[in-house]
Length: 298
Image (cartoon, rainbow, N blue to C red; front, side, top):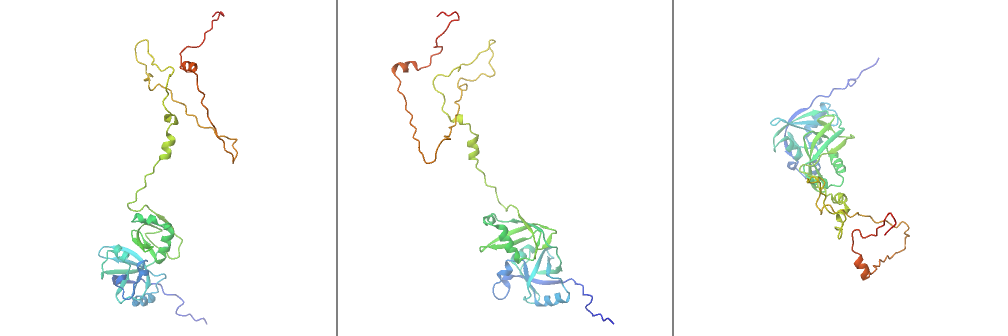
């Protein structure tokens, strides 16, 4: 004969639904609990643990907090069961999300959330960009959180400075659990952040024509006059004598490909002094060349 025990069919979990007075962690008797303030878990009374055990609640214990006066909702985990009876202690940022004051009533309900795969945050202060590796800092701070809710403004602390981040998006739902999960994290531009103006000095210098930097031609310029039409009308392509001056061609320097490392070359340019006869004939004279006749006569 087989004997069946009473625990062959496990008891199904039943929902937990209670209403407590909420207080900030600063009102908790005893030493300061900074670990509670930095995370997303709350402190509940010992009687809640006994009731949760009887109801066979699944682990990890996650709760839905509701402020019935404002219909604000958030989610959290539990850290300890050491609060006074009828009271729960919440982080200050969680009370701000729920718009709760000290001693207000908050409704708590046990809930099961999907495991998170993606979340997107928006810093509320541009100073968050000063952190060298913000993803690593956020990953370290989220270890004190049990779940995330879309629309919440969470608070993290780094180098003794608090930073507020708005949860813009969570997947696969509006509320997720982040306990022992592999989650992708993205950041949106902080509130009030402005893109720095880029100075395009190098591009402007490269776009400038080097010929424009050359000095204006001096002395005689051939074909500098303006053309005229036989019918007396102005030419469409006629320009002023100043703009018709040709630009000096900019010639780039040619590197010495035969240069040997460790050698120095001193190049001296000597200017040959011109005689008086050469100076007189150095000026340009139009049509000063010698002519020839097809018949061979001078």
